[in-house]
Image (cartoon, rainbow, N blue to C red; front, side, top):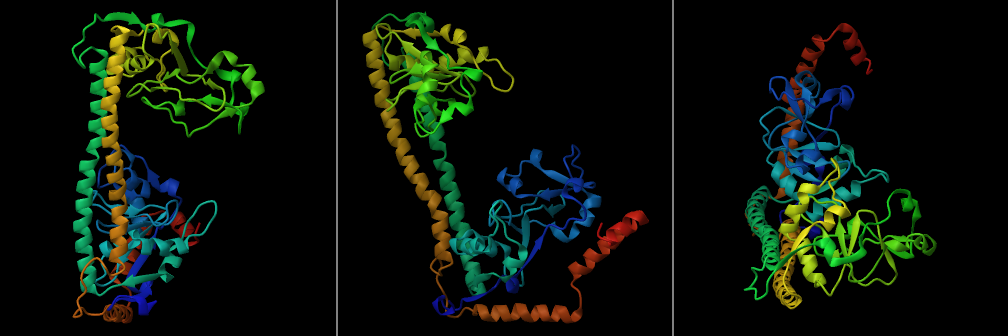
Length: 479
């Protein structure tokens, strides 16, 4: 592989250029970790885990260890700028440790990485975030139930090293480009919120007569007056339809997971047998029916059913609304149901502590404003036109987002092919850097133990001295 590398680059093993330390547990994790109310830095240290990074360092989710436990874990202590690489659960996920304002120690399922000599943790972070580095990690992963790798495997794995000057140029360029990508992503992420507000304002204007000058008199009606008796109904509850009744094919079951705000999620399919369906005929739904989720949180979820290849029924908490089309345009009714006006009326009626919902009686009492049918048709046509415009913008957003999401990996791949920054023939070859790191390690070995090793042993002895002799004896025996 050396012959295929850019000029001045070399391939070496991880242990030649970095140290890997894992979680050091002098006792069980459960006995050391605590969820505490007091965040006094004199008494507690943060146990850093992958989930803390995934939660954007939400302090309410952090786990702490006592300072006494932290002394036992001092060999795996962390400082801002250390590199964390997950080796269990999401192997290879890497991030730089931030400054959390308190002592920190490494949690289980992660490795602390520190570059040797002039090798920076930021360079290693970019390497293991790149396709090249990820491929090396994938080669280490073992285990079927839970994928993982260990520090021994990592230490023996291969890594590509450019000249130190080129490393610095790579890191500087990636920092610059990644910052630009994040700024672009932040600007782009405003678009879905803008589109959501746009669609909701269109709906509000449409169902209140403000979309354009209304020429007819609007009237207030209850939803129940727009349907025939029995044409607002819920799905079967409890033992009438159980999970054990589901089959691989047969009659379609419409569930809550299929209902979104103005659209039907067709990909999530559930079925029952024809025999079971015959016991649930009164819950039959079909093309053009409006399905309304009984659970109301941030917005109302309701949509119109498409055509299915089989018959279908609605499950519990999926209300079917089958309006009288001589009184109301079905699409106008759907737009009215999901508008902020309907939400504001229904949200005050929700009940249930863990699953806030309404019932069909409350839904029937929902107050709606209706113009004449002809004007309803005109309004629906205008809303559809404006929504089509929003859909085009959303499609462009999705395309741009997909391109931006691919860009980091594309840049990282270029970086570790030697194509991102210019190469300089005057750069000191990476082989010279490795020899310098090696010689430094030999010198430290001749002198004796490193300062970190001495500090750790001193800390451990001081901690043990404070323990009762019985506990000290058990610790020495590995109990």
